[in-house]
Length: 398
Image (cartoon, rainbow, N blue to C red; front, side):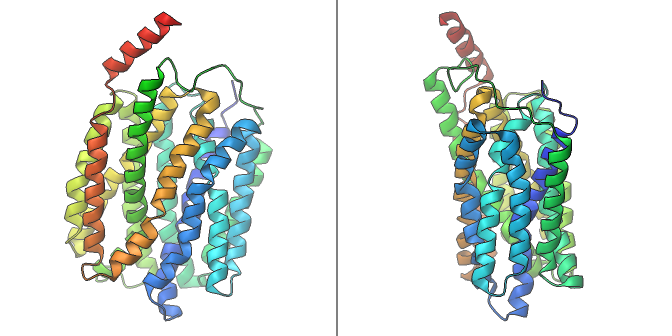
């Protein structure tokens, strides 16, 4: 078995950096709108290429990891996001920012199919491991708003790219020095599923992809728009970029612990009930956030993000529990190309609806409808009893 003493900490650190670099610009855009005298709705789409690449390159990354090396692909991730963030910090024109963010997204796409596949390959308590990994990812979301806001106030917007880029390169060097290369994944299974027939596997992954698509748009829309939402609705509570970033960071940090709690629940309860419950909770919270301001909006945002973040470990647990190890990077690649690719729609969705008379009210109401779709899909997920019977049937015919 692979030595995981350094592997798990670096995989968790990679999750922090992955979400941090992808959400630097939504915070930067708020300040650039004032500095460049351009509308926020015009600047935010500069990140669209990055979010598209973040999803589109997940499948190639998963294929490369399974056919070449997960370890070396993760090295490429660390050094790639570091170099592209540094390059973006030197941009002199909007198109250069857009190009830099696109390249960053391409390298950032490596993390989820490869890092998560490495993470779930060994631990017995998979839910807890995924929960803590999710916590570190959400701390990256929190750090993006907080660190970017602070760096912009004290050192200018370019520092918001330079500092994370330098940290990513340092992390890559540490990964290469301290984490041993486990070699290629051993091939032990002739089927993508673990003792589940093709019809049931198709049903599971169809539901997973629906939940992934709806959840991806909800996740990306809320995280991309949160700095601007707080800028508009909580301006009386924060008068600077750093203040807005601090409020966003507070919400993301507290909400991040929902993934740790969900990880514990995954190890104890069946996935179907958890999927139904977490989707059902999101619907009223997203609808409630549509019409609130001030302290009420802050409280609603916290509750809403607890539910949104709590959804994430469930989807990865499905792949980890029902998919053979040698196929996981590719299956996770498909999952994340749907999640992150469809989630790239969040950028034009938020920018477009922000121009309407309803503004962010319309954004949150649409997200509530997507949560209802996710809830409907989860009702068709096989129960634990049905899956146990399926395994017994498959094992008996093997």
